[in-house]
Amino acid sequence: MSMTDSLAKDVGIKPACDALVVSRASYYRWQNQGEDSEKGYIRPLSPLALSPNSSRFLIRCMMNGLSTKRHRRFTPPFWMAAVISVP
Figure 1 (cartoon, one colour):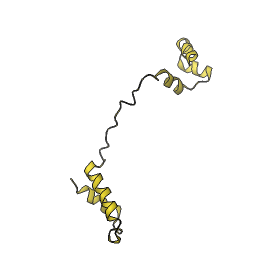
Figure 2 (cartoon, rainbow, N blue to C red):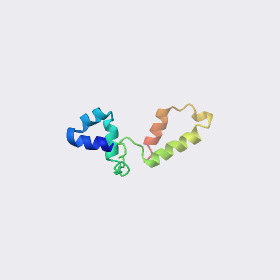
Figure 3 (cartoon, rainbow, N blue to C red):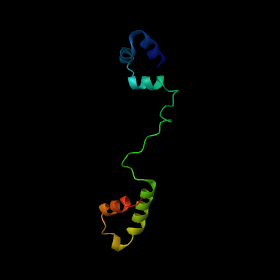
Figure 4 (cartoon, rainbow, N blue to C red):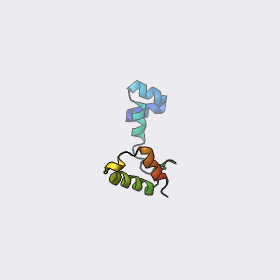
């Protein structure tokens, strides 16, 4: 990669990578290997994500409710309606 780096300074990155048969993605990864920018990134929650309380309620209902024959007839829309009603 150091040869690609030195050649890229003279002719540019794309021609250097093409000439030395090196993937540009590999070159850029090698060039930025000291940076841990992805570790510091926290992905934002989706606006449609369930709240932690709703998620726990849904799991509890499904684990407890689906074990009885009476609740097996309930469909996913029923469970989602129950979750939405939980604050």
